[in-house]
Length: 398
Image (cartoon, rainbow, N blue to C red; front, side, top):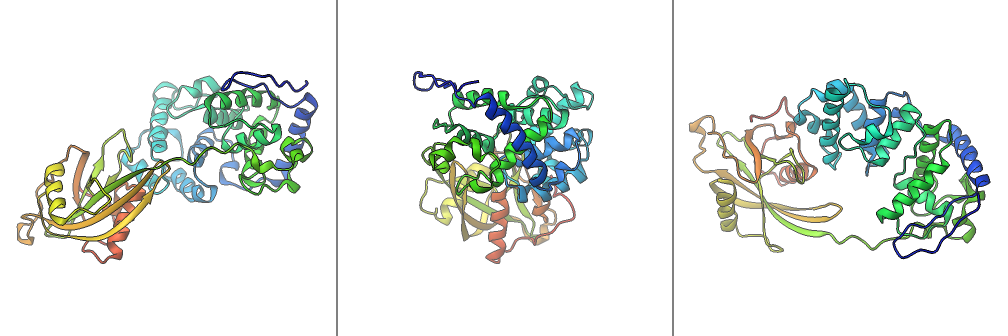
């Protein structure tokens, strides 16, 4: 098959592929290399579709070394689809806490319930049926279908896109959906009729360990003889780099409210939305970039959350950076008005409109927390604020 390079209008697909001899060499050399050089990872020890699916979800936008302890802990608690489907989402989020991108956990749980309710608890093996499940895009469906079931479909993630653009010397912007669709169609012609799971994993492994974003180790690449970017002398120029994403700046005032017995007031985020279902110190958005005065915080807490505060002071500040957000948090501490020790058990806290639920708890760490909430609590402890110590025996009151 000869290379076909067709002139098209800007933004349209470009037909670009390897010749048939190079595709055969690609398959042969890549699988041979993978058999000898693949990393010993826990999800490669068996072919359980559920365990493979779990690993693929956790590995999205997260490094392998970070995922492994979460994967092992999660699989111990939820060893199969049925146990995950029957679990409460709060427990799922607790195990996920710290891994980030919490939408993945919500979709994992929703898909497990879908599989239990509509597929008898058995994961579908066909690509199209997998694609209909919550959280399953073309990559996840392709990875599970090929690795777990041997289906002849591609699994094209960011690592594979990078490898492909270098092998093809493809200078298009891979962040464009049309370009990604075109490369997926090209990848379909590369997948061999046998060992499809090993082939797809090998492409991903090559991108993760050899064909890295910067300083690729071309001297150790099994595909060096067919790589067009290497022939051009600068593989690192592929894929084409897009401008840095502008981060939206947010300014928050978070309030650590304690009652007379030292319990902390926590709030649960509504779903859907950022950090859906997770717990945090109640907070309000401020105009920024200047920290609000204590009087303003007292007013905001009453207006937004129905919390009436006394003895308020600003204790510390933190910065939290997400892909599209730069968040500055000013942390204040205060007591709930009328919460003296002689009053005993505090009254049920109000449920602010910004949140799904609230609670007083002596063990905030037992709740499913966002990474930002964990940072807030750690910053408070570092500032020797009067809040409960880490470590807990169970979830707080709800």
